[in-house]
Length: 116
Image 1 (cartoon, rainbow, N blue to C red):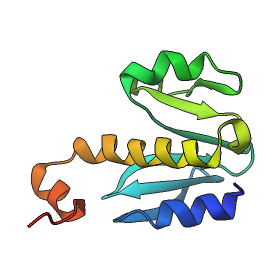
Image 2: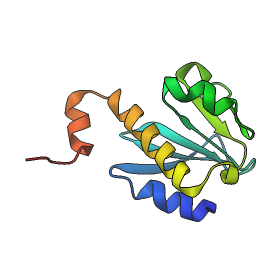
Image 3: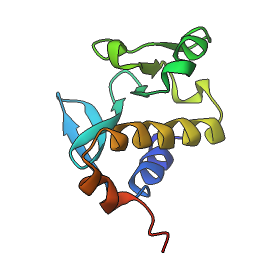
């Protein structure tokens, strides 16, 4: 997956916005909360993961603990090709869900599918 395909995927997730922060970091947000950071200079991608998956993910080649975010179970892919496209989509979708779960219930309801 290249960066444009990655960007298109992220922007396709409900409620996602993008912003350029800290000079060269393309950030994808849900209700102003970052769930993915792509460093355009370094070619890395950082995002939140399940606490139960954190140790297994950082044990893999090309994946490390995210600088400044590790306490919150964030990881960094040193290259977008470290994982398959399918796995990347699952991980990014889960990162969005984890960040969304921290928002107040009223805000969460704006981004959850209507099941009525």
